[in-house]
Amino acid sequence: MIESLEFKPNLREAVLRMEKFWNMEELIDRIPIIIELPKSDARKADGSFFGKLDLYKEYIEEYFIRHSAVNDEFFPQVVPQYGHAIISALCGAEITAASHTVWSGPFIKDPAEAKELVLNWNNEWGRRFMEDYEKLIEKARGKYVAGIYETEGVSDTISAIRGSENMFYDFYEKPDEAWYMAKRVADILIEFTRWNNEHIAKRNNVLGGTVSLYSIWMPQGSCVTTEDASVMYSGEYYRKNIKEHTQRLASSFTKTLMEVHDEGTHQIREFGDTSGISIMAIGNPLKMKREHREDLKKLLGRVNFYIYIQPDEIEDVMQFTGIKGIMLNIPATSVKMAENILERVLKMTEKMRKLTVS
Image (cartoon, rainbow, N blue to C red):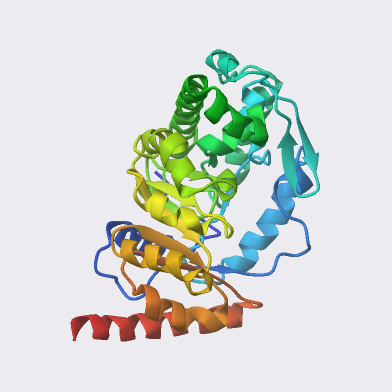
């Protein structure tokens, strides 16, 4: 078990805050926060570092060193830079880097072919992926950790391997074959996440938990997933074609984080009604459409939320959400500004506590 990290001086304190957050228990002082400091250049993950592990290490360590002066709940972690394309690659697709991401093209010509899908850890991409993880685990030792990889969502994966337009036609023209395709995809995603937990999380056990791609501490056996493709379809489409498969994926793990695209807030109600989804990563709820904001409000205190906001939005957002099961992500231009943000959140937490008691 990892009990200390060079680049995370307040490790135990941060883990305790996260445990209270996950269990929706009485806070020790304030709600958890991740402060985003400026990166040293415009470089981002995935495409910019695809196949450039040493460059990635140098870049990310510089950030970790600067960030270690901030006493927030950011947990320094690294993952191989393959983007969402790694699932497709393990199934046989070719992947290429493009700008700040990594892409793969559809390779299934008919949904019936999905029954042949397997994760091939011995193909070129599987070997490279595992080799990169081993190198990162060694480089991180004692300083930071290797995090669990994000698991692409069911419809995201179908869109990648079959093509988004074909996915829509399949569920209407070949519903039975499309259902089995979605089931097989969910099987693969569960297998991938279990590999994550067995080979990465257990070997990087941070005081009883693991660190996700979002640099969030999560209980062992957790999953991080996304359904960006859901911006293209309605809640009804999700309920009819995707929900049961996402539910099986999410319910297979201790905690499952669902990233909600800024253009996909119409799915908040559906995700909230999907068994197994225990936390959603979202933007400022006060900027959502009224009906989506109301959907979210009904979930407060039942589902955890990780919310990306700006410094001038802290008080208004916390006033709306309350403090139970809430975590914030806030940018700061300097360590001094980060300290000011932490103080403001502490004061607002205390204020909300008093209101709850009264």
